[in-house]
Length: 415
Image 1: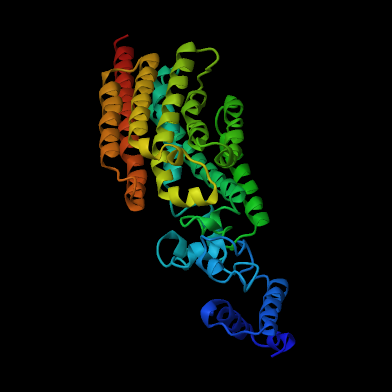
Image 2 (image 1 turned 180 degrees about the horizontal axis):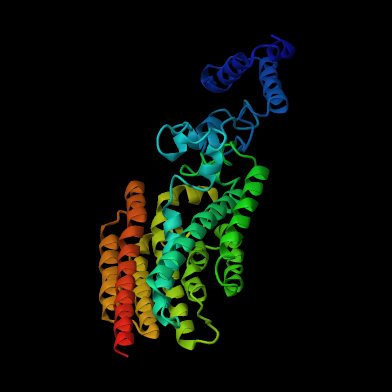
């Protein structure tokens, strides 16, 4: 059969003929020199004319880690099984959502909703909690003391900002990682990675989100602009950090913890003029950085094998065998800095017992129980640890604020 005749066959027939030629055991191969040349020609033609037929990310046939290449070195100059195909062959393909919020959206909206992880809001909560912490810690320091209605309104505004900016951060991350995500099991079906969204459309959508975030930021006192805009540098830097350092979680901590500063100017407190508030904000910010590194180190263990193959760096890869000790050290650091923030802000015993004590207990339980070798267990603690630890810190801060607010109201009435 001539090369021209083979190329006129339907694509399925060409693929079957070609795979049969590649997978024939060498011991039973009785091909003539002309047959071998025909197979090589067909393969070259496939790569040239049909580039969608798995011609991306080829490894050379000398790669002994690939059984197909190792078994047929004399048959073809490239390995027809790409890294992406090799990763995905035992994994389920993408399925259109049939339940939850995504299933209720128009099909054309689904990739954009997936891009901002609207179906996995845990990241939004982790971005929001530092904003809530700083709002509750700053409220008693405002002059006059911020009212409960003001605290609730500011907190809701922060949640809207966290929802939008977390989505923008996810989109920026996926744009940077569009050539890495297809090689990691957990990320291979993200919309850009699987081709459901073009990079240009994702970039345009990200621009819209950033403008929406700016609109929310403008609802706060104008000083918040000077504190909020610099955080975008960290948002853009985090995906790059994964390529150059084993500690990208630290950069993520600098990004996600920024809200620990924002609550103070949002309630009208000038950090440059109030040294006590500045000290409290600094301690609270660094405490949240430690918390971010802690929970993201657990998160990183879900991808530790794929990250190593894809060349992505993480603290989990660097300190795999010392993870529990590092988590314990981060927990002690987080709680110590949180307590220091409370001292600087003049917090009462309710805060130290509820927030600091509660965080110590919940973190100790999580670090002891989490199975770092289980993807499912790491995910469970990542999702639920957000509410457990973040919840007890918030409750302690909220109770302390209410106690101080009621005490101040009582004193005002007596006067």
